[in-house]
Image 1 (cartoon, rainbow, N blue to C red):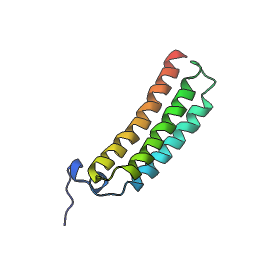
Image 2: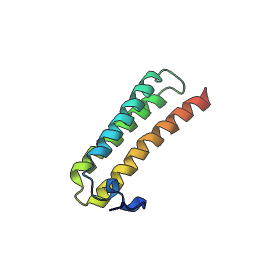
Image 3: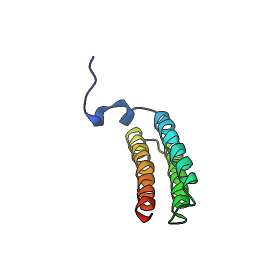
Image 4: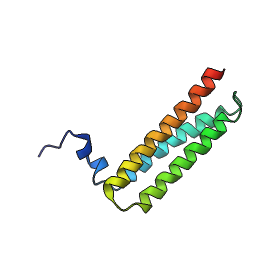
Length: 101
């Protein structure tokens, strides 16, 4: 039995529990928080702290979605979007800090 190659038919976006999204996003968020925490003294001051807060809030939103949303596809789509948002948020803050240096 072959699996569909369509993204919309993958198990991670259709029937999974969401635990994998939380683990992957947790690792990404941890890396982002550690890097941003170490960059908090760099200009512009406060950008790294705002990035840390944003990362933590997005991860907490993921936990709320994982346990609060019952519809599988919606829950998994939101978890995927929030995982991407954590990465994009880090890149925006890091790029802002690099360009201001």
